[in-house]
Length: 437
Image (tube, rainbow, N blue to C red; front, side, top):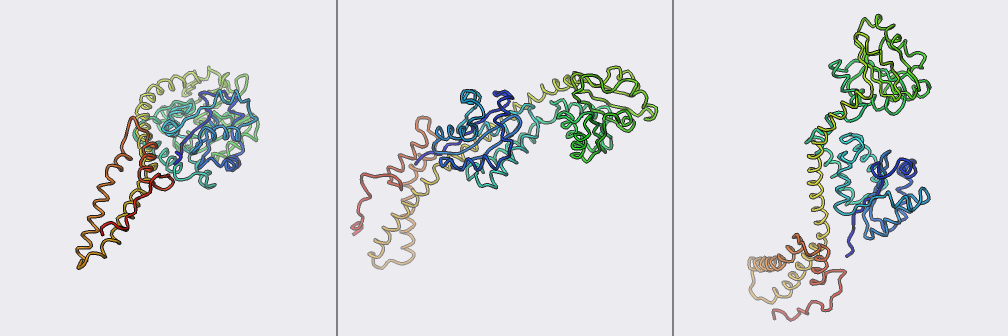
């Protein structure tokens, strides 16, 4: 019996430059590449993940080396040179593939350790594989175990409790100033990725409204729509200050977009309500002198980095606990997989023993005169007990852990000894027609 291997290959932010990741990203969605992989008959089941930081292919095959080359060629041929591809693609097999998947799901391999986004991306990728029926018994079980391992990490550690991203650190600082962000109004200056991430964190805190101010009004409208907010042009910036409680600025401007006198002019109308400003742009968007105004709190990216570094130390400690959980879950899955490998042989072995017992009983019992039903049942139980005792050591041999003998080799030995289906035997079972005569 050929052994089916679990293989995971991919590229990520740790090993592959952005310029190459961009070329390998599956930007057109999952359906087309998943259907392309159907061409490879050597793939038993497979799954794809594509994010801004990684592209990974997970599959089960009896021909792992050949399928690795064919998968890479099918998905990535012509996008980058063969030399570039081989230099940046990592390949994991067996328990290493399982461990890597669980590590990714638990966000221990993310650019920001502990972020929750990756688990949602994994589930979305699995949904596509499931709908297209490209995942089967092994990968279905494996991916569900990845999700439960991630859940354990979230509930049993505090890996996601402290801010280790600039956008999340901004939210934490806001909570320290206001106590609660519920009912507060947030203004985003700029409609880029950093502003979007900050808004995502803030929306979860119960804020009342998001206003997006941007030089290009169309981009402001698109981002505001995501958070059911409203948009404004950059020329309306000062007018919007009167109602905002929290301002996060992250434009690509080369100079300041908000000066001290702009903020000072609206503070009387605000009746000195606190104003919290976060400048995460480089170069800075907000005039540092703003911080000298009463009831105005201005933080720049260096202030936020200090918060991030302190929290990162705490999160690194929690990551150690999380890795222990990943190891435990990897071990449990591999035990299940090994049991799956021996199960067909165990079933065939038990079926063979039962068949022999049944045939012998059918030949022998009619020859015994005066045998009552009670005695017949006793003989049948005795025959079954003898068969079970004879199978005890072969079954233990199959199931036990052996340092020197590979499980697949043990399966092959047992199948050969007992002439199970698919194995050639030099001698068939002896003719038992005259037994018990």
